[in-house]
Length: 509
Picture 1: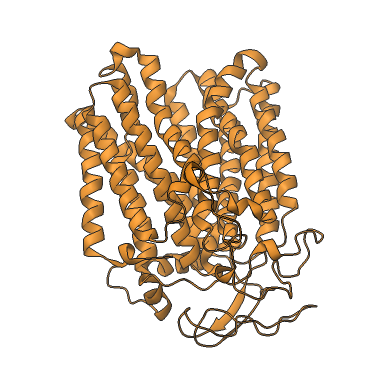
Picture 2 (picture 1 turned 45 degrees about the vertical axis):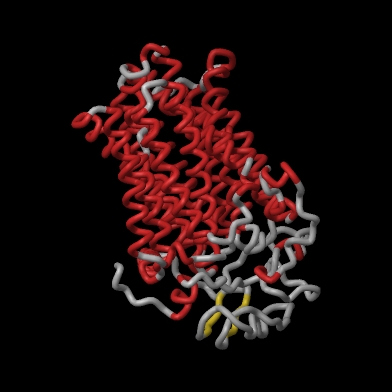
């Protein structure tokens, strides 16, 4: 993989040049056109600039402490605001279902093993359909794909409610519904993330990712707490119904998005300089404009039909290995999660090391600490979202995550350990923001779906592999030693990668 040849485009990107973008910003799009039109999303004659040339700093800069707070500039773009709202609406509801399913499985079987089997049954379709869904997202209108998958998730949530309300008490039915919902979710999450770069400017990508990640982390904190409070009051079946209602509201927000058809084009050269961004287009609109790509090329927003099979998925993996920056951004997350995510050891730490504080309190705080840190990091994302050295930010964030995890392992006090994990959660938020920005800016639009599919698999699969690794390490070395060693291993490995392969640390947006 390290010896793979890179194209001219990838070399330019690895040196930190801005990747050319395919469309003007969506704030200049005819967002009030009837949903589902085939017109290019951002095709207005008043602005033919590529998105990374838009004057996004047209508002006075925030002064004083306000610069530290979350950068909300992307919410000025109506299409992104709708996408963000659809995510925010379902952030808590999805966690209600995430609590209800294992609770119902345990109530039926009385076995934690069956809870584990059900979780694994959901992981397999998530991985497969996230990868395949990325290929689909590169070939169809992403808005339409979001509508189909959002509707699929809503229907499965409604079926969850029906089976619980009627007392079906079938573990097999629960597993089948969970597998179906995770398949829809894998495609939906991939498509949603791949759409962001079409809705905001290049400079606003870190802030956009921070906004999306913050609402997700907020749901992870408050969703389980709300589920625990609601079950004794309204009952378990109603958790599914609440989730279904929220998904219907999200479906309306997605319906109001502009069309996001795939982009096609041919060209040569690198993506820096000037050239014709789009020549003549098919359909009722025709325009020309100047872009930021050297060489020659033509493109249209109405794409010819392309396949979305596993051969295209494999092409996505080859695309990653051909770009050092993309490859290292994925490796950085794998290193951070596999070596550094200690959640599998939290139950034992709560029962032994931190038992004087109360096992229940310790367990709750340990599991909540990292998501709380991510929320705090998102709320204060103004401190980092304007940084241009995206590669350095990823490296620094992963190293900070490793130090925080090691610090939690060395802490004899529960509150010190939780404090370190909160700091680690904030560092992980920074890493996720800039890894996402690198992926969205380096990858071309016809590859963003597949790149986001791999991203989803890494984010979902990394912690599960970490559970296995840390479980075995904790049994062999002891819990605190395993946590500390894992954090230090993250630091050493990330610094070694940064020194040995400079493409990531040299990357600038």
